[in-house]
Image (cartoon, rainbow, N blue to C red; front, side):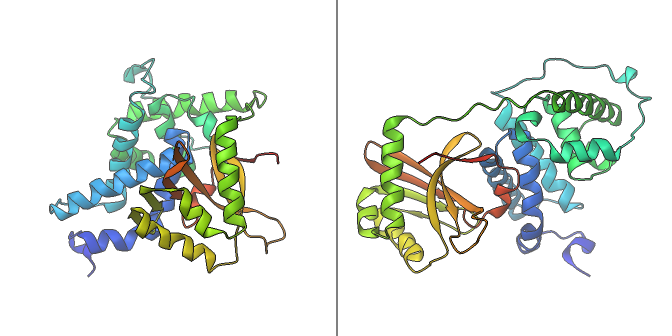
Length: 299
Protein backbone atom coordinates (compact mmCIF):
# COMPACT_ATOMS: atom_id res chain seq x y z
CA UNK A 1 0.00 0.00 0.00
CA UNK A 2 1.30 3.49 -0.83
CA UNK A 3 1.31 6.64 1.27
CA UNK A 4 -2.00 7.86 -0.10
CA UNK A 5 -3.90 4.62 0.44
CA UNK A 6 -2.69 4.37 4.06
CA UNK A 7 -3.57 7.98 4.78
CA UNK A 8 0.09 8.85 5.41
CA UNK A 9 1.13 11.85 3.34
CA UNK A 10 4.61 13.18 3.99
CA UNK A 11 7.20 15.29 2.19
CA UNK A 12 8.42 12.46 -0.11
CA UNK A 13 4.84 11.70 -1.14
CA UNK A 14 4.18 15.38 -1.86
CA UNK A 15 7.38 15.79 -3.83
CA UNK A 16 6.59 12.65 -5.84
CA UNK A 17 3.22 13.96 -7.01
CA UNK A 18 4.32 17.54 -7.81
CA UNK A 19 5.91 17.01 -11.26
CA UNK A 20 2.59 15.81 -12.66
CA UNK A 21 0.39 18.19 -10.71
CA UNK A 22 2.35 21.45 -10.85
CA UNK A 23 1.30 22.44 -14.41
CA UNK A 24 -2.33 21.89 -13.42
CA UNK A 25 -1.90 23.99 -10.30
CA UNK A 26 -0.27 26.73 -12.35
CA UNK A 27 -3.11 26.71 -14.86
CA UNK A 28 -5.57 27.35 -12.06
CA UNK A 29 -3.48 30.02 -10.34
CA UNK A 30 -2.60 31.85 -13.58
CA UNK A 31 -6.25 32.09 -14.58
CA UNK A 32 -7.19 33.24 -11.09
CA UNK A 33 -4.50 35.94 -11.16
CA UNK A 34 -4.76 36.85 -14.84
CA UNK A 35 -1.01 36.40 -15.30
CA UNK A 36 1.27 33.41 -15.76
CA UNK A 37 3.95 35.21 -13.76
CA UNK A 38 1.69 35.98 -10.80
CA UNK A 39 0.31 32.46 -11.17
CA UNK A 40 3.77 31.00 -10.63
CA UNK A 41 4.21 33.18 -7.54
CA UNK A 42 0.95 31.76 -6.14
CA UNK A 43 2.04 28.20 -6.94
CA UNK A 44 5.30 28.72 -5.09
CA UNK A 45 3.43 30.10 -2.09
CA UNK A 46 1.10 27.10 -2.26
CA UNK A 47 3.97 24.61 -2.30
CA UNK A 48 5.72 26.34 0.59
CA UNK A 49 2.55 26.18 2.69
CA UNK A 50 1.97 22.55 1.70
CA UNK A 51 5.52 21.54 2.66
CA UNK A 52 5.19 23.32 5.99
CA UNK A 53 1.92 21.50 6.63
CA UNK A 54 3.21 18.00 5.85
CA UNK A 55 6.38 18.64 7.85
CA UNK A 56 4.03 19.54 10.69
CA UNK A 57 2.33 16.15 10.23
CA UNK A 58 -0.93 17.52 8.87
CA UNK A 59 -3.51 14.82 8.17
CA UNK A 60 -4.13 14.68 4.41
CA UNK A 61 -6.68 12.28 2.97
CA UNK A 62 -7.24 13.69 -0.53
CA UNK A 63 -3.89 15.25 -1.53
CA UNK A 64 -4.90 16.76 -4.87
CA UNK A 65 -8.01 18.49 -3.53
CA UNK A 66 -6.00 19.55 -0.46
CA UNK A 67 -3.35 21.20 -2.63
CA UNK A 68 -5.94 22.98 -4.75
CA UNK A 69 -7.59 24.20 -1.57
CA UNK A 70 -4.28 25.74 -0.46
CA UNK A 71 -3.81 27.23 -3.95
CA UNK A 72 -7.33 28.63 -3.88
CA UNK A 73 -6.71 30.37 -0.56
CA UNK A 74 -3.31 31.64 -1.71
CA UNK A 75 -4.87 33.05 -4.88
CA UNK A 76 -7.56 34.79 -2.88
CA UNK A 77 -4.93 36.32 -0.60
CA UNK A 78 -3.02 37.48 -3.66
CA UNK A 79 -6.09 39.05 -5.23
CA UNK A 80 -7.73 40.51 -2.15
CA UNK A 81 -6.09 43.87 -2.64
CA UNK A 82 -6.92 43.95 -6.34
CA UNK A 83 -10.50 42.94 -6.45
CA UNK A 84 -13.39 42.27 -4.11
CA UNK A 85 -16.68 40.66 -4.75
CA UNK A 86 -19.11 43.33 -6.04
CA UNK A 87 -22.24 41.33 -5.76
CA UNK A 88 -23.55 38.29 -4.01
CA UNK A 89 -26.41 36.09 -4.98
CA UNK A 90 -28.79 34.36 -2.66
CA UNK A 91 -28.33 30.63 -2.56
CA UNK A 92 -32.06 30.07 -2.38
CA UNK A 93 -32.50 31.35 -5.92
CA UNK A 94 -29.81 29.07 -7.34
CA UNK A 95 -30.43 25.67 -5.80
CA UNK A 96 -32.44 24.45 -8.77
CA UNK A 97 -29.86 25.28 -11.42
CA UNK A 98 -28.71 22.13 -13.15
CA UNK A 99 -25.06 21.34 -13.72
CA UNK A 100 -24.92 21.10 -17.50
CA UNK A 101 -21.10 21.07 -17.60
CA UNK A 102 -21.82 21.70 -21.24
CA UNK A 103 -19.09 20.87 -23.69
CA UNK A 104 -19.59 24.22 -25.41
CA UNK A 105 -19.02 26.06 -22.11
CA UNK A 106 -16.00 23.89 -21.37
CA UNK A 107 -14.48 24.60 -24.79
CA UNK A 108 -15.11 28.32 -24.37
CA UNK A 109 -13.51 28.39 -20.91
CA UNK A 110 -10.48 26.40 -22.04
CA UNK A 111 -9.87 28.75 -24.95
CA UNK A 112 -10.52 31.97 -23.03
CA UNK A 113 -7.53 34.22 -22.43
CA UNK A 114 -6.33 35.30 -19.01
CA UNK A 115 -7.73 38.81 -19.51
CA UNK A 116 -11.21 37.32 -19.78
CA UNK A 117 -10.94 35.39 -16.52
CA UNK A 118 -9.67 38.39 -14.57
CA UNK A 119 -12.94 40.17 -15.42
CA UNK A 120 -14.99 37.54 -13.59
CA UNK A 121 -15.62 37.75 -9.87
CA UNK A 122 -13.39 35.57 -7.69
CA UNK A 123 -16.14 33.03 -7.07
CA UNK A 124 -17.10 32.85 -10.76
CA UNK A 125 -13.48 32.60 -11.82
CA UNK A 126 -12.73 29.75 -9.44
CA UNK A 127 -15.85 27.76 -10.32
CA UNK A 128 -15.39 28.06 -14.09
CA UNK A 129 -11.69 27.19 -13.97
CA UNK A 130 -12.14 24.18 -11.69
CA UNK A 131 -15.15 22.73 -13.52
CA UNK A 132 -14.73 23.74 -17.17
CA UNK A 133 -10.94 24.04 -17.49
CA UNK A 134 -9.61 21.45 -15.03
CA UNK A 135 -12.57 19.06 -15.16
CA UNK A 136 -13.38 18.77 -11.46
CA UNK A 137 -16.85 17.73 -10.42
CA UNK A 138 -19.15 20.15 -8.61
CA UNK A 139 -18.55 18.34 -5.33
CA UNK A 140 -14.76 18.44 -5.79
CA UNK A 141 -15.04 22.14 -6.63
CA UNK A 142 -16.96 22.75 -3.40
CA UNK A 143 -14.22 20.94 -1.51
CA UNK A 144 -11.55 23.17 -3.03
CA UNK A 145 -13.36 26.49 -2.71
CA UNK A 146 -15.17 25.83 0.56
CA UNK A 147 -18.41 27.10 -1.00
CA UNK A 148 -21.76 25.33 -0.79
CA UNK A 149 -23.14 23.40 -3.73
CA UNK A 150 -25.74 26.07 -4.39
CA UNK A 151 -23.21 28.88 -4.32
CA UNK A 152 -20.88 26.94 -6.62
CA UNK A 153 -23.67 26.32 -9.12
CA UNK A 154 -24.56 30.00 -9.00
CA UNK A 155 -20.97 31.13 -9.59
CA UNK A 156 -20.54 28.62 -12.41
CA UNK A 157 -23.79 29.71 -14.08
CA UNK A 158 -22.94 33.40 -13.96
CA UNK A 159 -19.28 32.90 -14.83
CA UNK A 160 -20.17 30.93 -17.95
CA UNK A 161 -22.66 33.59 -18.99
CA UNK A 162 -20.05 36.32 -18.50
CA UNK A 163 -17.44 34.41 -20.52
CA UNK A 164 -19.91 33.98 -23.38
CA UNK A 165 -20.54 37.72 -23.29
CA UNK A 166 -16.82 38.52 -23.25
CA UNK A 167 -16.19 36.12 -26.13
CA UNK A 168 -18.57 38.14 -28.29
CA UNK A 169 -16.67 41.38 -27.71
CA UNK A 170 -13.95 42.45 -30.17
CA UNK A 171 -10.39 41.91 -28.98
CA UNK A 172 -8.92 45.23 -27.82
CA UNK A 173 -5.52 44.38 -26.45
CA UNK A 174 -3.37 47.41 -25.80
CA UNK A 175 0.09 47.24 -27.35
CA UNK A 176 2.64 47.18 -24.50
CA UNK A 177 5.27 49.89 -24.43
CA UNK A 178 8.64 50.05 -22.78
CA UNK A 179 10.34 53.06 -21.27
CA UNK A 180 13.31 54.20 -23.37
CA UNK A 181 15.81 53.74 -20.54
CA UNK A 182 14.48 50.28 -19.68
CA UNK A 183 14.67 49.30 -23.34
CA UNK A 184 18.26 50.55 -23.61
CA UNK A 185 19.37 48.51 -20.60
CA UNK A 186 17.53 45.37 -21.69
CA UNK A 187 18.83 45.60 -25.26
CA UNK A 188 22.39 45.90 -23.99
CA UNK A 189 21.89 42.86 -21.74
CA UNK A 190 20.40 40.81 -24.60
CA UNK A 191 23.06 41.88 -27.10
CA UNK A 192 25.89 40.92 -24.74
CA UNK A 193 24.17 37.62 -23.93
CA UNK A 194 23.67 36.74 -27.60
CA UNK A 195 27.29 37.66 -28.33
CA UNK A 196 28.29 35.27 -25.50
CA UNK A 197 30.27 38.07 -23.88
CA UNK A 198 29.47 36.73 -20.43
CA UNK A 199 32.32 38.61 -18.75
CA UNK A 200 30.54 41.82 -19.81
CA UNK A 201 27.21 40.40 -18.64
CA UNK A 202 28.69 39.54 -15.24
CA UNK A 203 29.98 43.10 -15.00
CA UNK A 204 26.36 44.30 -15.12
CA UNK A 205 25.13 42.30 -12.13
CA UNK A 206 25.04 43.66 -8.58
CA UNK A 207 27.07 42.10 -5.78
CA UNK A 208 23.87 41.07 -3.94
CA UNK A 209 21.99 39.88 -7.04
CA UNK A 210 19.25 37.28 -6.60
CA UNK A 211 18.57 34.58 -9.18
CA UNK A 212 15.72 32.10 -9.49
CA UNK A 213 15.77 29.44 -12.18
CA UNK A 214 12.12 28.51 -11.76
CA UNK A 215 11.62 24.83 -10.93
CA UNK A 216 15.39 24.31 -10.58
CA UNK A 217 17.38 26.48 -8.16
CA UNK A 218 17.87 29.79 -6.37
CA UNK A 219 21.17 31.62 -5.98
CA UNK A 220 22.28 34.81 -4.32
CA UNK A 221 25.41 36.93 -4.64
CA UNK A 222 27.60 37.70 -7.63
CA UNK A 223 30.04 34.85 -7.09
CA UNK A 224 27.34 32.18 -7.01
CA UNK A 225 25.15 33.66 -9.73
CA UNK A 226 28.14 33.96 -12.09
CA UNK A 227 28.04 30.16 -12.52
CA UNK A 228 24.56 30.48 -14.05
CA UNK A 229 25.97 32.27 -17.10
CA UNK A 230 28.45 29.46 -17.59
CA UNK A 231 25.53 27.06 -18.11
CA UNK A 232 24.29 29.21 -21.00
CA UNK A 233 27.81 29.52 -22.39
CA UNK A 234 28.04 25.72 -22.64
CA UNK A 235 24.68 25.42 -24.46
CA UNK A 236 23.81 26.34 -28.03
CA UNK A 237 20.04 25.84 -28.09
CA UNK A 238 19.05 29.41 -27.30
CA UNK A 239 18.81 32.92 -28.71
CA UNK A 240 17.36 35.90 -26.85
CA UNK A 241 15.11 38.73 -27.98
CA UNK A 242 13.02 41.42 -26.32
CA UNK A 243 9.30 41.06 -25.84
CA UNK A 244 6.43 41.09 -23.37
CA UNK A 245 4.82 38.34 -21.31
CA UNK A 246 1.35 39.23 -20.06
CA UNK A 247 2.21 42.88 -20.67
CA UNK A 248 5.45 42.78 -18.66
CA UNK A 249 8.83 43.46 -20.31
CA UNK A 250 10.64 40.15 -20.74
CA UNK A 251 13.54 38.52 -22.51
CA UNK A 252 12.22 35.75 -24.76
CA UNK A 253 14.17 32.52 -25.21
CA UNK A 254 13.96 30.73 -28.55
CA UNK A 255 15.78 27.75 -30.02
CA UNK A 256 17.47 28.94 -33.23
CA UNK A 257 17.58 25.35 -34.44
CA UNK A 258 13.79 25.06 -34.54
CA UNK A 259 12.22 26.26 -37.80
CA UNK A 260 9.13 27.75 -36.19
CA UNK A 261 11.18 29.89 -33.81
CA UNK A 262 8.70 29.26 -31.02
CA UNK A 263 9.31 30.80 -27.61
CA UNK A 264 10.54 28.09 -25.24
CA UNK A 265 11.00 30.22 -22.15
CA UNK A 266 11.56 33.74 -20.88
CA UNK A 267 13.50 35.78 -18.36
CA UNK A 268 12.50 38.70 -16.16
CA UNK A 269 15.30 41.11 -15.23
CA UNK A 270 15.09 43.77 -12.52
CA UNK A 271 17.44 46.75 -12.42
CA UNK A 272 18.71 49.29 -9.94
CA UNK A 273 20.31 52.00 -11.98
CA UNK A 274 22.74 50.25 -14.32
CA UNK A 275 23.01 47.07 -12.24
CA UNK A 276 20.93 43.89 -12.52
CA UNK A 277 19.61 43.05 -9.06
CA UNK A 278 17.28 40.13 -9.83
CA UNK A 279 16.84 37.53 -12.57
CA UNK A 280 13.94 35.08 -12.90
CA UNK A 281 14.56 32.48 -15.59
CA UNK A 282 11.50 30.48 -16.72
CA UNK A 283 13.43 28.25 -19.16
CA UNK A 284 12.52 25.11 -17.17
CA UNK A 285 8.94 26.13 -16.33
CA UNK A 286 7.40 25.48 -19.73
CA UNK A 287 3.89 25.24 -18.26
CA UNK A 288 4.03 29.01 -17.82
CA UNK A 289 3.98 29.40 -21.62
CA UNK A 290 0.67 27.57 -22.11
CA UNK A 291 -1.57 30.50 -21.19
CA UNK A 292 0.93 33.35 -21.54
CA UNK A 293 0.20 36.28 -23.81
CA UNK A 294 3.53 36.75 -25.56
CA UNK A 295 4.45 39.43 -28.07
CA UNK A 296 7.80 40.34 -29.60
CA UNK A 297 9.17 43.84 -29.43
CA UNK A 298 9.96 45.33 -32.82
CA UNK A 299 13.66 45.71 -33.47
